[in-house]
Image 1 (cartoon, helix red, strand yellow):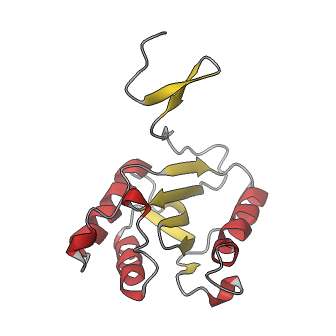
Image 2: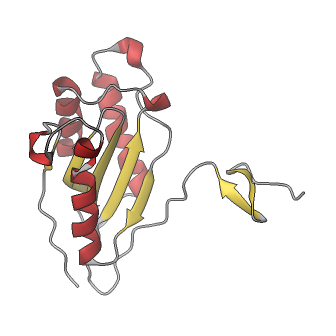
Image 3: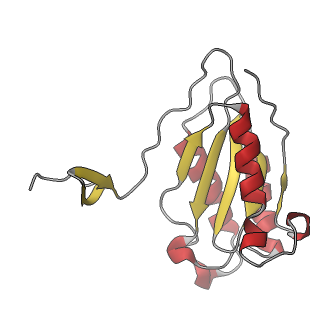
Length: 169
């Protein structure tokens, strides 16, 4: 068997399978909207996020950043789905921004026995079409309903929209 890079776990169908997601640079193509769908989890999938104080800490960290903006989001007990877009022309890598706000939240976390809070990495996908934004948001906002945490998405208190993102083709 070939030597497998440290970024892979095992081989499936002759191809290495990654242990951690690849984070491709976000790019501007033909002046289209640059919206990235992000999913990140708590360390060991601990159910620690779906409470008012945690929600407030996360929102405050997002609001403190000027480099990336958060649009629609859903905070679940052990993971977060959010849409983000660059907030300035010369924006840092997405990975740096995610690390920035995760660190802010971790520093202010009032429950020390729950540290570490975050899984090391996250999943991200740059959206290519406006329909994908609408479809993904509808799927994400139904997450609390599918998990039996709310009767309808509007009843879930840990979701919202900080900035309105419009799709421009």
